[in-house]
Image 1: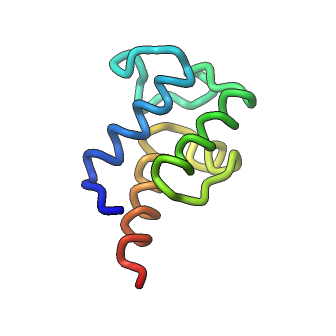
Image 2: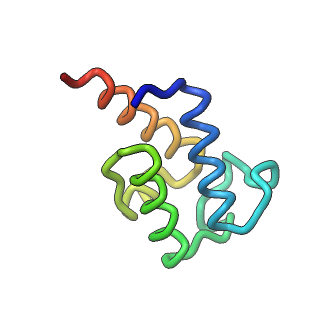
Length: 87
């Protein structure tokens, strides 16, 4: 699956906004997930959607490690790009 850098960011933000029941324009990329209202139940749903839509092996722990959508997107982008480069 070939994805452009911008489309990865857009997809992650759309998925996050969807689980938070917010318009994507209302989700601050620099705010911590907890401050955005992402509790453990929503985090499970979000990570499952990221895995399904982008084909990356993420865990709930990733959200705590990367803390903000911006940092998480960079992490996911690296995984997607690395996956595309793999034989």
